[in-house]
Structures are given as structure tokens and as C-alpha cells.
Length: 289
Ligand SMILES: Cc1cc2nc3c(=O)[nH]c(=O)nc-3n(C[C@H](O)[C@H](O)[C@H](O)COP(=O)(O)O)c2cc1C
Ligand code: SF4
Ligand code: SF4
Image (tube, rainbow, N blue to C red):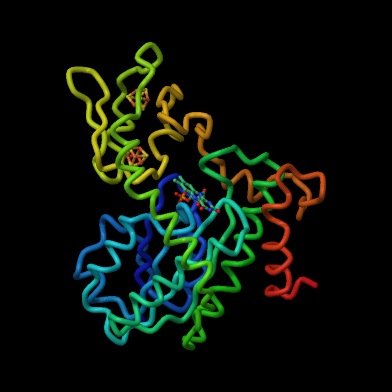
């Protein structure tokens, strides 16, 4: 049985959830190791016969830390690699990071065998209503089965290219320096904060520390939203984007098994336009119609 390493970056859990779905689906064909990107060693990569790479879409790109990590990958020549991403809305613009990733991997001599994007409940801008969030999580279950079968075939995968969309995504990389700028300017509501230290210990890039009982931010933020979403007192303030703050993680188990109709997407769904074409294309891919 070949070894599969699934390495992912996940700020608030969506990409980690999809990584675990894929891990479960592929465990009959591979010996699967699931790892957060920051914990992967060169040895892990060297030992793997196949590699899965996952990331959340940030401003129509992958987070800068993710691209940087992929650029630093060694020992991938000739390896089969698949990619998965999660995004909060369906727009095709969100697929552009796959074409950057495919180009990076090609330069390293790796062979891309699948790239699929999963729409999952937003971790910024607005909280997705439970019924719609349940539809997203349940579709993710279906798509992971489809992608696992695609991966098992081990055939080369071509990522569609669109020059205009690539330019738009490139311009949105302004988010990278903005994240560092905002990171330093995030604030904590001192009256609400219990100094529990959760935000500091969980930040994937070490942007937060507790100093003399106060939460202090620096300039390394990648805007993953983990601290904001998981603060038990909801007391982290997002500088200019504070009205986009979403607090409280989604309960995937409940959403996957809950009593919501499936699919629940209709013209009455809040922000339905963000999802319509994605789910129409997905239904076609999955052969649901
Ligand atoms: C800074 C930031 C930018 C985002 N930009 C986009 C985007 O351009 N398009 C989109 O569909 N979702 C966007 N999202 C939503 C995330 O892609 C989505 O919630 C994702 O599933 C989060 O994955 P994670 O929980 O693994 O971090 C953004 C989220 C953040 C925090
Ligand atoms: S997680 Fe919230 S309550 Fe805990 S130290 Fe950080 S800001 Fe304060
Ligand atoms: S400071 Fe918060 S949003 Fe920024 S990288 Fe750390 S956990 Fe993520």
C-alpha cells in the first residue's frame, strides 16, 4: 500500500475538515498521514508516494504562507500530487489559485492528478445560516467521494487557465501586505478578555503573544481568522474590517447529520447568487441530474 501525505493550511477548520474527509475516503487505497502544513517535515514529504495539498481561498488566491511553503517543497520530482481548496462562495474566480499551484508544481517536476474546490461556510464577512451551511458540508461529503475516485485513477489533471481571471487574482494579492498591516492593528476588548491565551497559542504564524497580561499583535498576520473565530469572549477587533468578524466555529458533525433538507438552496436563500452556478456545475460533475 502506497503512502499518502495530506498537508494542509487551515485557519478556521474548513480545509482541515475536507482534508479529513479525503483522508477517510482514501484510507482503503493508501496509508494516509494527515498533517497541518506547519508540522510537515522534509522526511514526511520524502517518504510519501502521493501528496495532497489543501488551502483556503483568501482574496481569490491561496494565503501567502501556503504558496511560500509549496515553493520550499523538496523531494517532489515525479510524485503524484492532488490539490483541494475551500472557499466561502462559488465564484469561478476562486479557482485561479489552482493554476498558480499547478505551475509551481510543474516547475518542481511533480504531476498534478486532481484539483477540486469545496464551498464551505464563510469564516469572514458573514456567518452562513445553518441550513445552507449544512448543504455545503453535505455536498463536501459527496465531492470528496468523487475526488477520491479521481485521485485513485492517478491520471494527469489539466487545470483550466483564464488570463483575465489570473490578472484579477494577481491584483487581489494586495491582501498579503494588508494582512500584515492589519495584524499589527488588531485590538482586544480589554474588558471582555479573560487572558486565557488561546489566541496566542493557536496563531499559526506566531503573530500574537501575551505580554504582562495583555494580548499583543505583531506584523506576521496572514488573516486566517483563527483567533477571531475561536476567541471564547468574542473580543478580538479586526481594525478596518471589524464588521466582517465571524465568531464561533461551525459544528461540522451537526451540519453533516442535521435535520435540514438537502439541498436547501433556493432563490429565497440568503446570498443565493454566490452559490447557484457552483452547485449547478457540481451537480453536473457528480451526475446528480
Ligand atoms: C482573509 C480572507 C479572505 C477570503 N477571501 C475569499 C475569497 O476571495 N473567496 C471566497 O470564496 N472565500 C474567501 N474567504 C473565505 C474562506 O475561503 C473560507 O471561509 C474557507 O473555507 C476558510 O477555510 P479554513 O477554515 O480552512 O481557513 C476568505 C476568508 C478570509 C479569512
Ligand atoms: S482568546 Fe480572547 S479571551 Fe482569550 S486571551 Fe485571546 S482575546 Fe483574550
Ligand atoms: S493573528 Fe489571528 S488572524 Fe492573524 S494569523 Fe494569527 S490567528 Fe490568524
